[in-house]
Structures are given as C-alpha cells and as structure tokens.
Image (cartoon, rainbow, N blue to C red; front, side, top):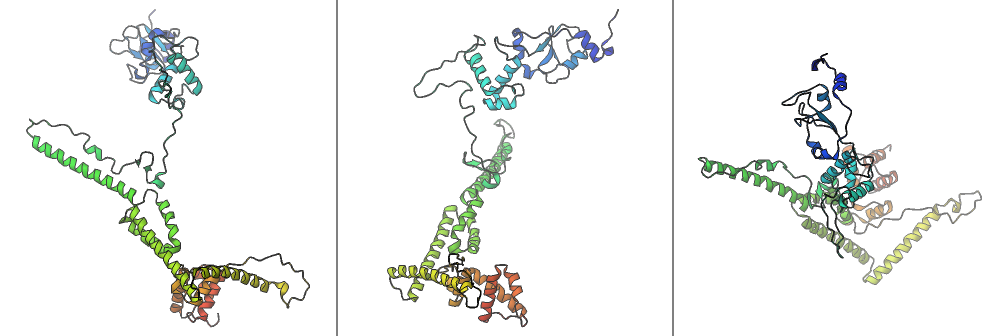
Length: 453
C-alpha cells in the first residue's frame, strides 16, 4: 500500500501522519533556545514562535505551517527525523518558571533594566509581580541556585557605599526629568538646559556620508573643494540653529505667558497700553536690559506719584512730613464720616416725609462705595479739579476717563448731539457711571444732548 503524495495531503492529514507525540525539549538543547529571537523559518522566512520544528539531520528549522504542508528546501527532505522545540519546560528545579519566562526576563533586563518596564512590555510575564521578578533573579542567578556555571559576583562591603548588583540599582526609584508642555516652554528642557527639538534637524544629513579622500586621486582637489563647501554650508546651518536658541533664551520667549504676567506689575505706573507698546523693544534688548528699561520707567512713574502727592499737600498748606501724616489720617476719618452721613441722609427711617411708624434699625448698614484715591495715577495731571472729583466719585482712573471722554466727544461732533442711550452703547460700562459722566460733560458744555432726550 503506497502512501499518498504531498500534494494529496490536507493540512490535518499531514499533521496526523507526520506529527509524533509532542516531546518537550530538555536542557540539553538549551543552546538552541538562546537563538529563539533570531530563528526564522527556512522555507517562508517568517519569525518562529515558541514552538517549531528542528530537523535532526540537516538542522533546518521550519514553522508549523510549512512542516504540515511537507515543505522541502536545500538538503532538507520531508522524511528526515525531526524534533519539536517547545519552551514550556522548567529550566531550573523547584520552580514553576518555564524557559519561555526565563528568556523574557533576561531579554527584558538587557533591553530595559527596569522591573516595571519588563512587566509592561512583556506579555509572557504579565501574570508575575515585581517582587516575584526580583526574588527569582536574586535566587537563581545572583545566588547561583539555578546553575553552578553562572559567574561569581563578589560583593565588597564598604562603610560608605552600598553594594551594587547587576540591574538592581536605580531600577524604579529614579523619576523622569521634569518636562514642560512644548506650547508653554517652547520645547525647552530644564533638566538638560537645552531644547528637545533642534531647528533644521536634518542639517547633519549633509555631512553624514562624507568619506575621507585619497590624495592620489586625480580629482582630489575638486573633491576637497566640494567637501569644504558642504562643511561651510553645514556650519552656516549650525550657526542659524544656535542663533535661534540664543534669541529664545535671551529675549524671554521660553515662557511668553509668564513674561506677559510679569508686565502687569507696571500697569499702575506705566499703564497697560504703554506696556504693550514697549514689548516691541524686546527684540532689540536682551532680557536683562529690557528689565532695566521697564524698571527705569517704573521708577519715573513712582516719582511722578510722589510729586503729585507733594503738590496736593502744598496746595493745602502742608510743609512738613509730620503734617502730611496727620492730614492723611484726618482725611481718612473725614471720608468715613461723610460716608456715614450720606447713609443716614438716605435712610427712609429718618425722613420727615415717612409718616408710618417704623422701628429704627441703626445696626443695619448699607455698604457704600469708597472714593478712589487717584493722586499720582496716570493722567492725573491732565484733568481739572472738577474732573478729579468726578473720577474719585465714580471710581474711574484718569487715563480711562480721558479715553471715555474722547469717545463721547467724537460721537457728539459727528452727529451734532449725543443721546444717553448712544453713550451707553459706546462705553459699555456701568450704566450709573455712564449717566454721571454724561451729565458732567453736558454741564461742562463739551457735549450737547438731543432736544427730546
């Protein structure tokens, strides 16, 4: 009775005829396990899994699919004796670790050197814990419980330094360096004091393939000049990269949002509009020089503020600092008294027009607005005395008052009149402040109301 040919066999029939009972490999064939990751099928050139066929006669390796189909190549024939290589045996005694897990552990230590990374990257060891990995490696490898052929590790006791073991120092205790968001820190890494991504990162490709020249070559001079030109072009690109890094470092562009928030400290003396215009000078000044410029202007604003206060003291006949302190204390007391007086004048319980008997509840106080101290603020010297009183009352800074006043006057000159509703639409501030400002400008004759307004 003749056997069917290879072309007549189905995959299941070939497996039944050719596959013997599975034999697990012994430690004697452990030399073939070390090359597991490098083995490929001799027929289809695919990577072999943990179970494949090894020809005992010609040492060819086959995957299960090619072997089931009776593949033949080179000196290998499908009737040669073979072995089934399986990694599910125990490599060491008294342990439930298989050879497949041992290989995953050792490869993970070589590639990562970190217990957490080994568990994360390896699917074979996913059911193990970090403590199991440490204890198994210490007992069977460092303490040589697995084999006496492992190299000896001599640990020298030292009073100053702790003994170090392979892959056991700084595996999980070292934190990653602090890295900021690229949009916030401009790609700057404070841990390395450098940028994560270089400008023109492909510049090195120009010189990557340059080779040394042979002086005896007929075109030696031409090739030398060509290489010099390439190096000069590479140097120019390197210079542009360093120039851009220097601009970002020296002009405060690593954290632009923080730079903008830092400018807010000058808003009271230099005003926000002027600060925004001065930021254009950051491209001409380094960070230190720009700070000197802003601090100088800030000091000028403080001197103007002190000068305005001294002018106010002199206008009231105050000539010494002791008198100025007394004046400020009395002024504060007077403002508090005026606020209480205004509250009592507006109370309905004290009005003679209120005829119904009511109980006086003096303890309930209505919170009023404290007048704004505008002395020395930007634009203070540009407004008149009546305008200063208005700014204090409605709590409006002088520079904002001048801007709002200019808007209303321009609209009045364009139409010939100005309605209160139009003023509220233009200013877009509190309606009570708009009403007081509108009435004040009418009383000063700077705007004209509509006849039926």
